[in-house]
Every structure is written in C-alpha cells, then in structure tokens.
Length: 228
Image (cartoon, rainbow, N blue to C red; front, side):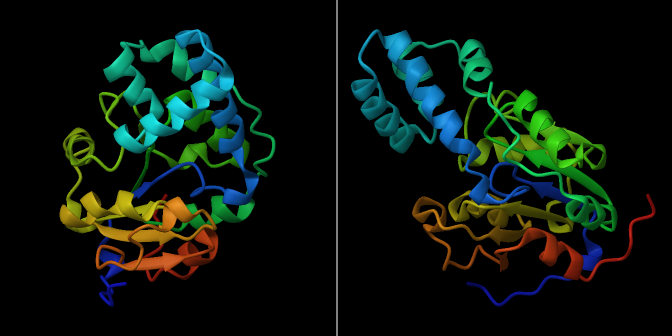
C-alpha cells in the first residue's frame, strides 16, 4: 500500500461506492442479488439453473458483470434484468445514525458511483437514513452499462459532475476498482472486507488509505466541518 497521505482538508467531492461500502459486507445483500441473477438468466436462456449459474460466473469474470456479458453475447436488454435482480429485501441493512453524522461533517459534495441501479441505491440509502447527503447517483445506466473498473465511466463521472480529480476522494470495497480513480488523480480509500475477490491488488500503490470501518475512518478524517 502507498504511504502517501493527501491533505484531505482540500477535498471538495466524496465519491462513494454503495454495496459493501456504505453498509457492512456482513449484511450479505449481494446473496439475494446473486440468486436473482441466476434465476433471471435461467429464464432468459431457457436452461436449468445450474448451467445458468455457470454461465453467470463465467460472464462476470470476462466482462466485469454478468449483465454486461449477457448484453454483449446474448443481446439481453438490461432494463428488465436490473428491475428484477434489485427487487430485494434491504432490511438486513440497519439504519445508521453514526454514518449519517459522519457524512454530515464532510465538506463538499457526496456522490454515489455504483455498478448497480439508481433504484437499488435509493432503496439502500433510504434504509440507512443517509440519502439526503448525496447530490447525485452515477449508476450502471449512467455508465452506459460499462462496469467498474473500465476507465471510461470514471471519466464520464468526472465530466458529468464537473469533478476536479485532485480534490476528490473515491471510497470503495473492491480494491481493483480504485485503480482508474487513482490514475485520474483521485485520492482512494479501500474499505476492507473478507471477500477474496475484493482484495485482489490491494497491496498496490493505487490504495492511499484503507479501513475496515468506514464510519470510524470518516470520523477521523482531518477535514474542515461541513457548512451544511
């Protein structure tokens, strides 16, 4: 991990991943999404769930998400897929007054950048009780269905929201998803989880800060208090 310690007091834009970042990975929301992806693919491809699951995982490895792979290789329209797979129970996520307070002290804008849908992000943020802090959501639709860590949507995020990269932080649980952010000049924060796939590349120089407790890290970040 890099030893660089950027002056966080100069940050005016905070870009947060959603799943397993704003809420603890132990909530395991993705298990619900994962099952619904398998079920949707089995119906779309007209095959047994076991074979659909094999294809799902292979496409995810090759394209970043199984949805992107299905669009490229099978011409699947994404709208119905996104509606179905994100129709989940978010009650395993607990409301977080501590996160609410930690976000309130951060100066500048807060944005969500997620490989999921805006609807899913809104549902999760509503459950956490933090949606009012965020000025925008850059979701997989805004990314033209190109998932992290492809560099193109990161540039699109910066352009759409007029972000000055050197005055921005990106916070994310999947270490490799922080590579394009660091290359663009953003400060990066890796939120550690127990998932092996999320750790790949975590010892590289594109990780500037890391934590296993987002709220504690935000509370300790040396920033000027928000005026809002």
